[in-house]
Structure formats: C-alpha cells, structure tokens
Image (cartoon, rainbow, N blue to C red; front, side, top):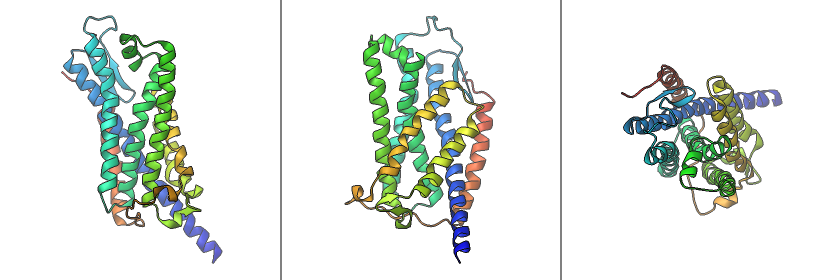
Length: 274
C-alpha cells in the first residue's frame, strides 16, 4: 500500500513538473518575443537599425551615430521594461479575476508574471553592472554612480516584493493538501517552480547571451518568498482552489509546445523591420 502511494506521489510530482515546465517555457519565449519586438518597433520608428534574434535585439546603427538622439535612447531602452510592466500587471489582474482556471493556464499566468517582472527589475540591475541599456539613460539624466548603485539595490528589493505579491496570489488558490502549517510544501515548491525554472534556464542557455543569463539568475530572487509565504497572510481574500490535472491540461501542454516551436523558429530566423 505504501509503495503504491509513493508511486502515485512520484507520478503526481512528475506531471506537475511537466505542466509547469511547458507553461514556463512558452511564457519565457512569449515574453522575450513581445519585449524584444517592442524594442525593435521603437528602434524602427526612430530610424535606429536593429535586428532581433534569439540572443536579443542588436543595434546596427553605430553608438556615435547622430540617429541616437536623447529621445531615441530614452524611448528605446525603456520600452522593453515598460512592456514587461504592462504584461506583468495585466496577467496579475487576470489571474485575480478569472474564477475558474486549469492548472496549466494558472501556471502559464504565474510564469508570465514571474518573467515579466524579472525582465523589468533585473534588467535595470544587469544594465547598471554592464554599463549598457538603461545605464545610458541614467547618463543622459546625469545620475551619479552612487545613486545608481542604490537604485539597483532598490530594484532588487522591488523584485523581492513582487515575489511576495505573486506568492500571496498563489497561496490563495493552492489546495490545502499542498500546504503544511500554513506554508507551501517544499516538495510542491520544488516541483512547481524551482525545477521548471532551472529546466527553462538549461534549455535556453546556449541560445542566450551573458546579459540574459545574468537577468534570469537574478530573477531567482522572485521565487524565494514563495516558500516563506503563510496562508494566514492571505485572510479576507479568496480564490477558487486549483483543480486537479485534467485532459485540458494535456491539450494545453501540446499547444504550449507548438507555441514554443513557432516562436523559437520566428525569432531564430531574425526579425528586421523595414
């Protein structure tokens, strides 16, 4: 009896990892696609030649070109983070107000939130370290190095606070059997978030550059509050508990996989707006 019970638990954890991983993978490619496409569009609109591929957006216009005006620098480098903010808040609201959600759709929305806010806040920190992107905007605004360091620390703190908010949202819909003493079970945390997060990083490692890898790793900060969040901190607000896995989740996994293949092929082919 105990062997059958343990076998059933292992099957359940494996299914959970599978659903969360494909949800996360599709969310990652979708967020990267929309973010980079936004940057590419504003580059095109401001006459800055650029190309978008798996490693990000690459600007072909020389840095010292007259086309890099003050407005161009501010608009292009802040367009991506602004898009991430819109997506993150949009899916946060959607998760709250959609009453019935399958596990796959719930995980997809959670991962969109996680990756959106990661790319928003962690990009600022990475750009400050590498002296790229948003760092150029700070130079135009004559922001001192000390203030930039403080701002980077604040950005990491906001990343952590975002994790608290998403963690609270998750606890509101987490079935009691996945909690222990009011907290998310470690086994569930590992299966639903840590392992899929690590698998997405491993899957995309070779096609991303150093900047994206640093941003992704900094995003681990957003997951930490999940394991510390207590159910008692979400009293007064109620969401429907996540249902068990069903046939719709299998269909979703197939659709997520198709979506990943399509998005990856589109991005890998290189996108240039003319």
